[in-house]
Amino acid sequence: MSTAEAREIQVRLAAQVSRTNEVTRPRYIAGADISVDKGQATAAVLVLAYPELAPVDTKVVVGELTFPYVPGLLSFREAPLILRACEELTVTPDLVLVDGQGIAHPRRFGIACHLGLLLDTPTIGCAKSLLCGQYEAPGEIAGSYTEISDNGEVIGAALRTRPGVKPVFVSIGHKVDLASATRWVMACCRGYRLPEPTRLAHHAAKGSLRVKMGAPA
Image (cartoon, rainbow, N blue to C red; front, top):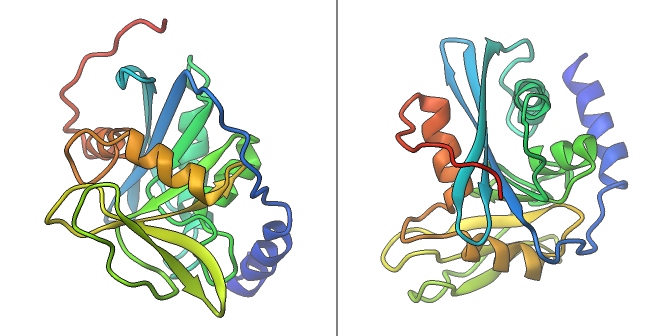
């Protein structure tokens, strides 16, 4: 499809994103990330048991990227491989943290929203950089956050997950509200800037994961 058609799809599907929280007591939380090298991508989805955050399943898929790199349209480029990895999971996650944007997106439809709708699963966008909007720096204490606003609308939160490091940018993906999304990202942190689900998925996509899978509870 053309980039114009992709943008039209985002605008249409953004209206279907649920901003109502449906996450209560997740037993399994997944992280999704993708690594790209010279047009070939490696997508990884890793499922952890909560609250232990012990890995119980991971799937890695390698393939070619067929959609061009266009800022704001990364889900059309990356989501197909991530979905392939999700299809191979033997453990179904109750919540998925995505390394990317949710509604903190110019058309309020980042990759976390796209995956959430297609999987019909609660998702949270937890990005390392800001795509749109403005925010004030949160306090230095871990757990401090400030709202991200764009054209008068609150679209996310800048969350300090570790003292002395840059915040991460949290936004609604699907079937979650912002307060819950921020709380779950912080609950999944274990002393690093990134929450464990996406941090470990990043290592899996890079081929540097050094943990053993346990048996699902």
